[in-house]
Amino acid sequence: MKSSLPKLFCLAAVAATAAAIADDEVFEVQEIPYSGRVVTASFADFNGDGADDLMLVTLDGIPPAESRTIHVHYQSEGGVFPEEPSRSIAVPLRAAVYDIADVLAAPGEELVLLRPDAVSVISVATDQLEHWPVPPPTTVGPAEDERGFERYRMAFDEFGGAPWILVPQIGALTALVDGGETLATLDVGRRANYYIDSGGGLLSIESDMQLYFDSPKISVGDIDGDGLADILAATRHELRIFLRDTDGGIPAEPSYSLALGLINETDHTRGTGSVVTSARDIDADGRLDLMISHIEGTMVDTVTKTRIFMNREGRWNLDKPDDEFISEGSVTSDVLMDIDRDDALELIRIQFKFSVLEMVELLLTREIDAVISIHQLQDDGRFGEEPWSRKKIGTKISFETFRPRGFMPTAGLDLNADGLMDFIASANGKGIEVYLGGDEGPFSRRVALQKMPTAGIIQLDDFNNDALADFVLFDPQTFDPTIRIGRNLGQLPGVPGDSGAPVGMQQAL
Image (cartoon, rainbow, N blue to C red; front, side, top):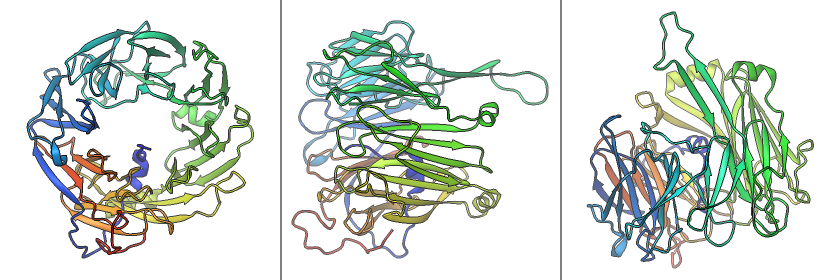
């Protein structure tokens, strides 16, 4: 599973650095100097040699004179990347986001770019370029991108055969297959709002009208239990379900819709409250289950309600949740993840307390506290009320950048090839901390720290195919940065052939 923790969990999960930890050499670090700003990084096999290459996107200048360039560094022997890019490609005009998938007959994987009226597919290896038109309404895409060029999932392999490209549009979702053929355009609904400056007074905004548009959250998986992948489009107000036909097609109109009815009158009128829907197969029965988190109120009167609905004969009964967690006075992020690799998901709850007292403490200490609790699925199909693991941790915040001092911690890959999910975190910007999964609890078995600057974003990937997770680290808020690529040396406890001697100190989370 190549998932990573959501940003809220990442922010909460920064582990406190223990004093006097040795500088453990867990990774061999390669440094590559870059010019401009590096805003995103991805690993993929672009030339078809079986090893993942490194893609970096740089921004130079300021809009409207800003230029965006895709740089690909082909991996060489020993997991080393050349300092100079193997290929550089200018981001096409008005491209909004990208994805990576094997959609052409050319070697390796291709770049899939979202544009206002088309999807562009670029082969890095051969320079092959295809434009796949998208029917109206036009896709959402900027003429000038002032925020970078981010990866957004559009390519889905769950349907069998060649990937489907699900193109987000204004109120619609177009499914492209087989070289750009339009299979269907789905009515997924839309949510948009606007703000018009009333004028007068001393406050003003850049434009007369500002538009806010939310694209529905798309989930793909078997809903009705027929073995075919279906599509779920979720907004804060409703769920729209699109069930595949027996011939594998997908309907343009929803097979059925479910109203959520969670936003109350107070939150509606003052523009507060949020709803987050996660569709995952919790109990490993092959069908998508639902977790719906609803945050009511503001920071001073926040209540978070999380309800779980198991799939019963191809549907969810939204009137009767199978599980429910209520957190008063806190903003809570809930994540489903298989930590111990037993095919059943765990529930990870990250709670932030918000009150006048907590805000004063944040200003004084420049640290935000969170409580992380992990709940295991029980035999009765419910998550245990008592957590498997529980920990209160703090994260130092930089008031200069308004972000954590180190990278956002993440999980989802194996650092020591023992089959368990591990955890990698920043020591508040001072190094890379490694926590290994184990039977005694998640991320609690051992810890190692390799000292280095760690501000920015980290991406994990086993780029040299040795079953050990590696990384690339970059800071999108720094001009002319140093890119750090870490190759796992296989020195952590638990690696096949390990004697059991610890790399660093032992510490429970």
